[in-house]
Amino acid sequence: MLGEAARTSEDAARYLDAYASAIARLAPHCTAKSVRDNPGISIKLSALHPRYEVAQRKRVMTELVAVTRQLAIAAKKANMGFNIDAEEADRLDLSLDIIAEVLTTPELAGWDGFGVVVQAYGKRVLPLIDWLEATASALDRRIMVRLVKGAYWDAEIKRAQVMGLDGYPVFTRKASTDISYLAAARRLFASPSIYPQFASHNAHTAAAVLHLAKEAGRTPETYEFQRLHGMGERLHDVLRTTAGTRTRIYAPVGAHKDLLAYLVRRLLENGANGSFVYQISDEHIPASAVAEDPIGKILALGEAIANPAIPAPQAILRASAKLRRARPYRSHRFWRGG
Ligand SMILES: Cc1cc2nc3c(=O)[nH]c(=O)nc-3n(C[C@H](O)[C@H](O)[C@H](O)COP(=O)(O)OP(=O)(O)OC[C@H]3O[C@@H](n4cnc5c(N)ncnc54)[C@H](O)[C@@H]3O)c2cc1C
Image (cartoon, rainbow, N blue to C red):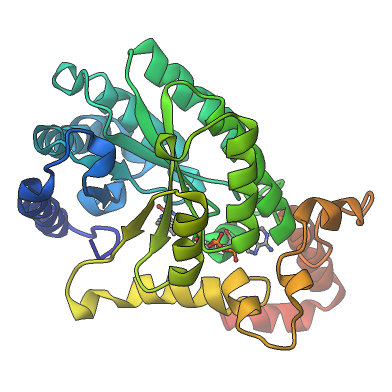
């Protein structure tokens, strides 16, 4: 569903209505016995509550849990997949509290369609998968996990800098995220309670996932690939025809005026010079560089794994404080100028 965080209760009510109507519209198309063969829906928790924030935990744990549960029960009745999209790192803990609470709902017992998205650029991705596996198996549930690299990288970096944190919640080199994705894929293949869903448009990542699937003794119907509507068509066609895997297509739905935020995320993602989609469309970059092994890239750096172009947030604040001390008049003007 297009549209981003709800700003008011009216916004949240509108998004709830849109999600509920989408489930109702998709329900007649959920004709397969297995939820894995039926359509699914992805929801954003931030769209369902105007104060989805840690400081409002008490309210969120009643109001947001209630609406998420209501939608999950409707999805279960339709036998369709229901995914919680991954958003910002600082709300990850809160989202897990909500997920744990919704998962315990007795009406959801015996349904394998509840899904969670995890971001490989997040440094907590492996413990997060451990937690999901443990939570699902303690409740005797099977869940779906969509593995993505993460769409909010620029915002995560900027937020950590503004807050002057000790470090970043996300990796600062693209190759580190690529490796993290593969480590997480291997972890997912080893999880008996998880149905893995690999969302990527990167051919090296997809080829490595196929390799890991083989290594884990997985057959194509025990996992799936995913792509965004309008992207990665050829790669996913090749995967289906050569490896017999399935691809689920994630399609944004909504009014034209709500397209902007989604479009900006896709532009940031695909406009970055390290992006696979960007590199593959540049004829001057040889195929060997586009599909370079990320492990080799990181090993070649030796000790210098942290990206020197992105100093720790604390170091940036220290440097600007020093500058203010050295040039008091200019810094005074700077602050007056806001
Ligand atoms: C079906 C589907 C559903 C999705 N749902 C979500 C979702 O719920 N939440 C979400 O956050 N994203 C979601 N995404 C987007 C996803 O996180 C990626 O942004 C996108 O798929 C690009 O990754 P890639 O493997 O296709 O391409 P690649 O070009 O291989 O990877 C690009 C990614 O690398 C990472 N990266 C880039 N530069 C750096 C750097 N300097 N340091 C560290 N990492 C870096 C970023 O995560 C960037 O998006 C979804 C994608 C798909 C296909």
